[in-house]
Image: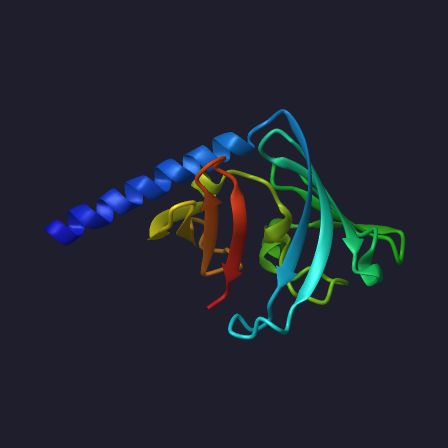
Length: 176
């Protein structure tokens, strides 16, 4: 019984923190510049690819992302609307492709197949994952999220949250 109560308390703490992260990130509009690092082997930190991205958001669910680097995909753009609809613009061909609901868990074509369209959409962390607390640090907490959508491309995510401003410092996606 003590273990169940402790587990429940950690889940409540994790959910409370994720709600604060969602609230801190909420705005009418925002522009974010970020680096997305893809590690094909989670145990080999030397083998990775970095993508520099500018993300523009309107509300919680409408997002437009543009890849700045690497040069091989510079200018690739992904538009995701709250309705779940997504489109990808490929600068090498000048074509736009609509991404269907089933394709959201598939890899992004033309980018090396390292991540899925699911990575590029907006939405609330609270509604996308069930959260538990993994580690409490003085300045950051580490949480684990299990997708609420059974068709997710991922089995879990790990989030490192800054306790000072309730922002994500790192979000790691896992397929196994």
